Amino acid sequence: MSQIRLQKFIADCGVTSRRKAEELIAQGRVEVNGETVRILGTKIDPDIDAVVVDGHVADLGSVDKVYLVMNKPRAYVTTVSDPQERKTVMDLCMEVSERIYPVGRLDYLSEGLLILTNDGEVANMIMHPSFNITKVYEVKVFGSVTDTILKKLRAGVQLEDGFAKPLSVRVIKQLPNKTWLEFRLGEGKNREIRKICEACGLTVDKLKRIAVEGLTVDGIAPGKFRYIAKKQLLNLLGLDENGQKTNNGTAWVSAKKSINLKKKGAQSGTSADDEAWIKYRKSTYNQTVKELDERKIREKEQASAASLAKRDEAHFDRKKRKALREKKKSDTTSFPHAVVVK
Image (cartoon, rainbow, N blue to C red; front, side, top):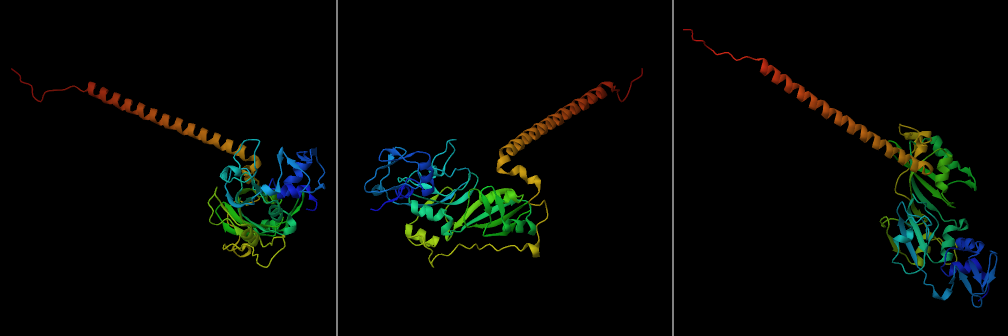
């Protein structure tokens, strides 16, 4: 076998994705023939060189490739392990014997479609922007989205790690105090939608990945998963075995109609970019929840005190009426109807 890049070999062995393999190499967690390797461009011959990752031998021959499609629920971390000991998506597929890992990320409070596999090449096809894989999200934000806000979202924003612009954004549902949007992304950087929304003054309430190209989460309950064949997966992603675009791929299209804000207008109420919604953002969410809990406790204590005062008042009122009745009774003298005089 000819020489290949070390990170590609690690991914082909199903240890992790190619990007994560690069991180492992840079961290000094990979050995080749007993020597720690930190150079990303290192090439190896799989037939000759021995590769060890975190103390485990990477072996191409011992890998059965598997592919899972999961509907990730909220409050799960998209990682193999979590130092904070929070629940991870791996807890939802413990019956899978192969060593798999999630492809891409959905943050702790996000939900929806997540692919898990031990096929590093396929994982790279899905994550790398050069393969032009479209990802579709439904996002609920606080407040009413105006046409001006929608134009800002569509125009894109400058973030710390570069310019971020969605392929498309549209309004799909209006609620009294919230608005549902559909985002389509090409690259899909870490927390890109939340960052775009916050840069435009919006606060995300819910975020759900609905589809990746033609692959959808339809029919999979939250916290559940299903197996999918590699051929079917690549077909739904619109790719062939070599990662080239095919004519078979069709990006998923929602049945939900767009709301034309120029004709219908935004719903009445507080604008989505009002600062009043900031307290519901993830960065301040815990503090907001704490304040809400404390307010509920205070309101409960006040209601309890008011109820007790009302009961005491009613008790004193009853005692007062009883005392008046007894006084009236004692002050009343009984006289006979007739007196006999002799």
